[in-house]
Image (cartoon, rainbow, N blue to C red; front, side, top):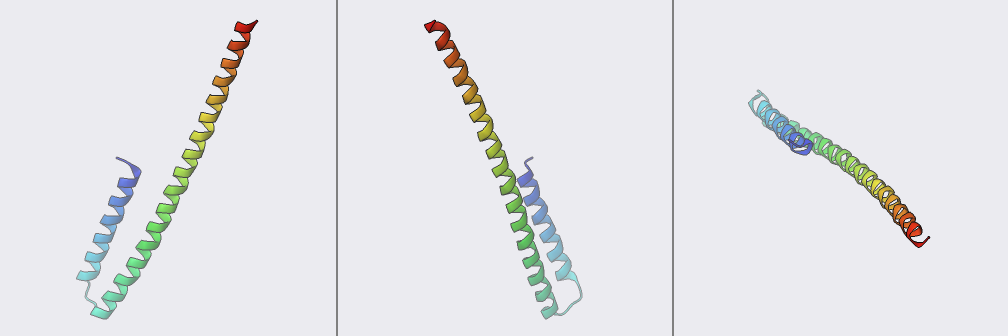
Length: 89
């Protein structure tokens, strides 16, 4: 299971549980709507932070992969150049 799917499932489950808890709590409609609004705002902030974190990690992985591929290409080019030099001599 991927981390993204796990996080999405966790967020959905937490949201459903929180909404159910609020709706079943003995509070007035205005208080309940205010709590739901606050929870929605908090969830949006947490989701945004999680997305940024995942994006930052993905960017780092891509950057690392590009660096590694450049290193490999340079090594291959060096080997090819050495092989050509050996054939010309």
